[in-house]
Length: 372
Image 1 (cartoon, rainbow, N blue to C red):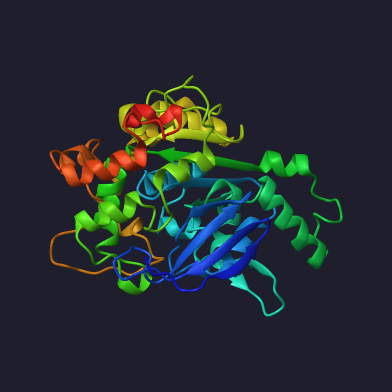
Image 2: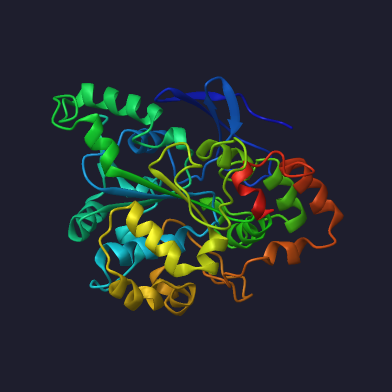
């Protein structure tokens, strides 16, 4: 493949290299490689994320309750945004648009970058966070790129040294920061993710990172890690422990299989199977006080069907969309198993999936092999 000469960008202890890929890849407008601990991982980003924003993400002070909804794309992110928002407000605050209260973390528009090199969350979002008493963000970044992690802490300390913030002066302890941050990591069947991501990117504007190729080309590029946010397996390995299978995330949420006990790992399939139990696990993990009676009353508003019926409140505002006249909607059908149906009997696709996942799923974290 033809790659242009790489440009190194420092992000905390990680190193990113920006490069352009060939025209057929998902990342033709912006491609980057994440190099953590000397291991190069292809991690193409959307054109709406610049290096200053990545640095701001890593160094966000954890000085107040903050929930990060984290995932590889198309794993139930928007659904969880609505769940966390409704639980945080206990259903007492009408929603105008979910992106106001739960912005896309690595979107340049979510931040204000000053000429002096400082960055802060855009007032439109920080004001909304103040209204509901908790910060909520959704993100597709890797664990090492997040605030409150080892790499993020180094970046935050460097920022505090430059700005003389409360953190450097000792007003915000590391223990307090650990207590403030909560992460929800969503996982989903890789074939369902691939099929959904193709429908998403093929209707996204080219200037915002859309995809113009066929679904066969997309499967090839996606499995090779050349689409936005890299390989599905690399993303999971960043957030999850690779060890022996002592838990199946398809069957129940867990705080023991992630890289940190502050990470609640939850599958899309479990959301579909037992929404009440999933929401109760989220509320407990994020310290959102919701009674059983309140949860019962909220459940209809926490469903996938509720989002489908109120689409204008949930369609992303961070990118532009193309109307192909085929009836595409951002919130599609929410079914489990669409990917298996889409790629059934497709030998071309199966070869690429085997190369990504392994013949027996051995390249997938053990806790997620039930999703295959």
